[in-house]
Length: 83
Image (cartoon, rainbow, N blue to C red; front, top):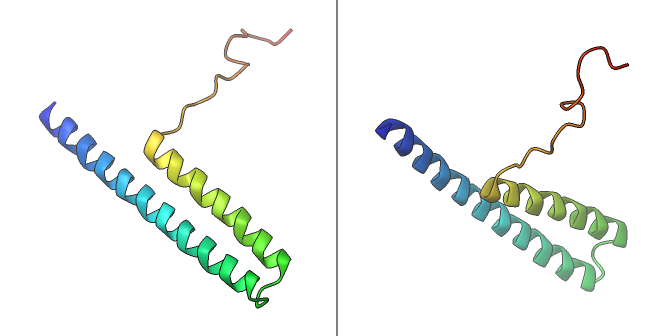
């Protein structure tokens, strides 16, 4: 059990730092793109695309930290032939 707990601790540490890196990358991208947009060097559609990517990065970082909770499959409670 000692090896399993050590591996879990190492994995938790790696997941935490991966999430921190994703949040930092998102922050840098958002700040830079807003500056470029305010200066008129970037179009609105590009800014919207970056905002969409930032949302995906933030959700991925949250999944890394909090983990993925599986939604119960509605078919699990049903049996057999499906009639």
